[in-house]
Figure 1 (spheres, rainbow, N blue to C red):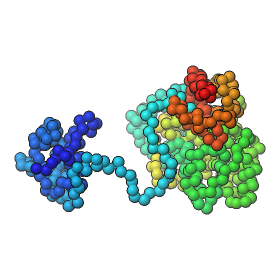
Figure 2: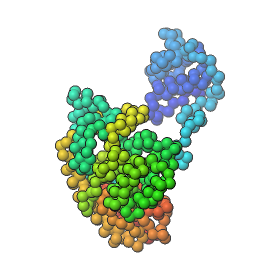
Figure 3: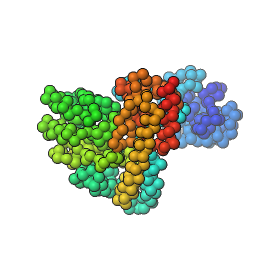
Figure 4: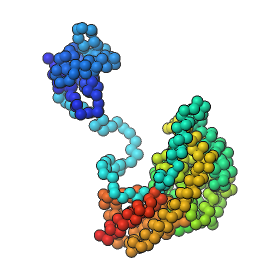
Length: 481
C-alpha cells in the first residue's frame, strides 16, 4: 500500500484546520507527480486511523478535494485521483515534507529596487522611540472622524457618493478643501486643481513620473528628504544636491546650476525643511519664484507641516504667489490627524491634475471615499480648525519644555537651533559623540538620523512632558557612558 503517512503530515497545533492540512498535502502530492491520475486513495476510516484523526475530518477533506476536481469519489466504493490530472515527473516522497513553496527565492529576472534591504525581524519594541515629527494621536479628533465614517456606511445616499470620483478624490472633500486652502494658505483654486492621494509620498511619486526621466535634471536640498530623493532617482533623472543653510536652500547656487544646464524641477520644503527644520527666507522665496519663471522649471513644494508655526503666522506657501502655474504644491493631513491615516493632496494646474489622476489609476483605482467624505465633514463643521488650535498650543508647550530639558541636561553634548514651528528639533551631536553608537542601543529607536551630519531629528509633538523627560534622561545616561 502507498505510504500515505509519509505524504500527509498534520500539525494539530497549527491554525490551519486538520481537513485543510490533509487536502493540501494530497494536492501537493498530485502536483509533484507522486500521486498519479487514477491512483486509489485509502477509505476514510483507514486514513483516519493512519493519521489518528476523526473519520469526519477525512470525509470533509475528500469532499473538498472532490469539489475542486482533484479527486473523484465513487459512492460506496472508493476515492481516487482524478483521471484529468496530467502525467507529471514524480519526486521522492520523503522530499515533500519540506516542500513549502514560499521558502524559495524568486529566481526569475526582476528589477532590484533596493540592494540593501534589512530583512531582520525585531521581536522586541524598544523602550524609547524618537520619531521624526509625528502628531500625538491622543489629541487627534479620531473619534469624531470615525463616528462620521461609520454613519456614512449606513446611509444609502452616502454609500453611493463614497464610490464616485475617488480616483481624483471625492468632490465633497475637494470642494471643502478649496475653502480650507484659501483661508489657511491663500490659494486661489478650484476643485479641479486638487488631487487627493494616499499620503504626500504618492503625490511626490506621481509628480516625479510625469516630470522626470533619464534626460532631465532635478535639484534637491542637502541634507534632504531621502524618500523623495529615492522617488526622483527611480525615474533615471540626474539629481543634484544644493546646500541648505540657516536661511533654507541656497538659491544663488540654484541660479549657477541653471546657467550651466537645463533644470526641469526643484524640490523644496520651504516652511520647515526636512530634516533641519529651517525656514526659507523671504528673499530666497522671491528669487526661487523668479528663477522658475526665467529658466522655466517646476517647483515641487512639499509643505508637510504647514499648520504648526508658533512665534508668528506661518509664511504663505510659494504656491500662493504669482508663479504662472509652475508650482506643484503637496500637503498632507497625516501630520494633523494620524500618520496611519494616509490622506495627502496635490494642488496643480488642471491639465497636470488630469494626467496625475490618469497615472494614479494605473497603480491605485481610488482612495477611501467614506474617509474622505468624513474628513470633509470634519473640515466643514470646524472640528479640524478647533483641533489645530488646541494641538498648536500643546505642541508649542512641548517644544519649549523640551528646549529647557535639552539646555539643562544635554547642553555639553549637543547643539541645535530651536525651530519657530513644526514638530521636531534637528539635534547635532558633538564631535566626540557618535550618532551611530547612540542608535546601537537596542532600547532606543530613532527614526531619522544623518550619519554624515552626526545628527538626528527629535520629534517632540507625540510625547507628553513625562515622556519627554524620560527620553532626555535616557539620552543623558547614554552620553555619559
